[in-house]
Image (cartoon, rainbow, N blue to C red; front, side, top):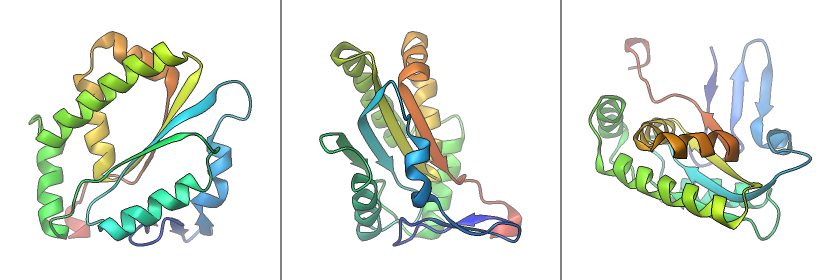
Amino acid sequence: RRHTRLQGDWSSDVCSSDLGRVNLMDHFAELLPSVGKKIGLVTLSNGMNTTLEGFEEMGFSITSRVTEGTLFIGMLTPTEGFFADIARSAIERGNYVTPIIAQTAAFMSSVVDKIRAINPELLWLDIRHSEGGVIGRRAIELLKPEQRQILQKQMCSFTIGSAKIGRAHV
């Protein structure tokens, strides 16, 4: 009923028979806190079948909407082709800790420790699409309980789509 198109265009048109077309990036400011804490870090993780060029476009689109001076880090999981990406995502959804999940957990652990030490009022905006969302969720599961508690206070997570492909989609 609803799908998100990200390949080559971070305008993210979401289509629904009830809603018409909605450009999620037109509502980007609504996702950010308007008062109080400030976004100090923005991270982006791609979904399946995303090219480097498409990922760069996503990153440029996001950085054009955040306050100047905000640190932006893009974490690209290179595509191996649609069907190979589906197979990799299925492994990531299981109980197996893949290298990218372990690397993401190590990155998140370092960020959690540093962001709190730098400024406990800074927020981390974490944007993930499909497979990136699976990787992020699994990485968070590997963090220490106290690190997960800090993330609950300092991370705004925005995940688009799920990396689950059912029989109706193949």
